Length: 193
Image (tube, rainbow, N blue to C red; front, top):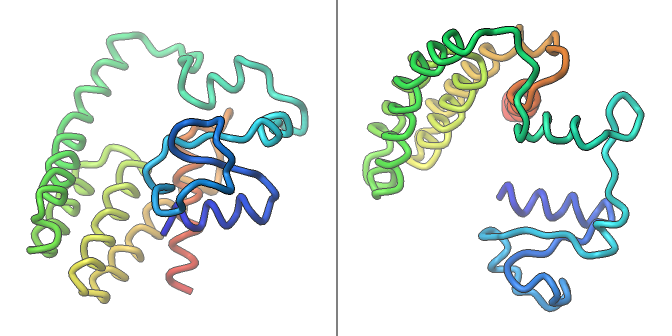
């Protein structure tokens, strides 16, 4: 569903996006059934039109690398402190990974409440708003897949509460996590008017 929405937006913007291999094939000839699998690519004309702005000015290579996470943000934090932060996040990522593994192994379709509980456990170990938003989104989807819509809405309401304060003031420069939290918040407001 998310991929279909993205392709609808691309079409509305006049951007041709292809999928699969080879990129030299005309987009009009591609089978739409395979577009959810990727890899995704732009046509030569779409690529030529592409431009990125930061504060209304063309972004340079360094700014794009920072935004995409290809280069580290300038930090005064010592390496030991960053390593300590990483080790504190291991419990969260372990819980989330196990919940995703259970869901993919078929447990999600057979026992939705157990998978939702696994994602809920991951949200309890979250160390920041982005992690909590990710786990709550997955929990809501697990409830929805098991046709327990009230529980799904409840998870979305929790999601709405977890990001509101943090998203109101962007960090400087805005991090990809902040932008993702902002997008999740928009989705939450749309689901819970």
